[in-house]
Length: 290
Image (cartoon, rainbow, N blue to C red; front, side, top):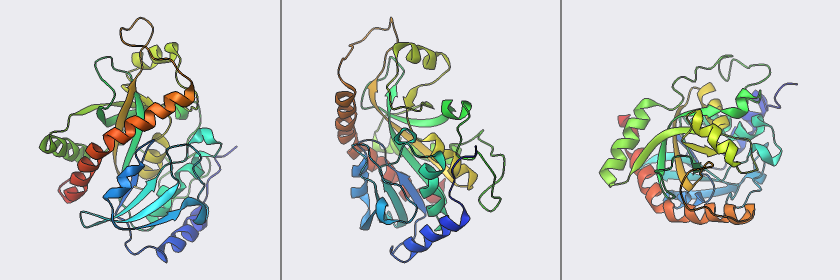
């Protein structure tokens, strides 16, 4: 069975709806992760549309994801911010989840900056760290679930997409330079996507560490794949909201319900937003240098 994708015509319908309602067409798409929706405060002259009002968009249902499209300017450049994302575990196809990226590319966006909240897998890291994503491990895709599964429309991109440099080297170098100028510690590492919504078992954590992952989350990879399919440049940033330890590793162990753990992620996001806002603004300001 093919991935349930929305095609060329539906992309055009959504793009047409937005073109009539937003004043500044986007050059940059910014996707915010759990607790990071406050990045919208960086946008000047902003206007907001709920996903539910945009043809073919699906609404976000997870706490910490507002489900709104915010458009305007940052550092003189057109920005479209997806305030909260839709996740695979909410029951939607990967094609629907990634549909907004295709629509905003149709409107002229050529760069995707994707953020997420992730669990750290490195024992020497701590909650509140920021990680520049240098690569990812697509566990969901390895299991056969990919937003490009099914017939390919060459108008959108090639049948086979090169992911050897999914995260643009020039943008990564720009991010590192911006972080250095701002005095922000920016770690680098590999992000791994699990399907969720369950958090990882200790055995899961041990496995992920062994295969080279530095942070784990339940998003990001599908949007990156579709952005690369469309020929967009991609920059990824993870907020390390908590550090997860495998059996036998030293450190404080926390217990709680999944709701309380997710609330902890949201609260950690609130604390890191000012630092992330400054970094992203500096990156966008210097985007033409990358």
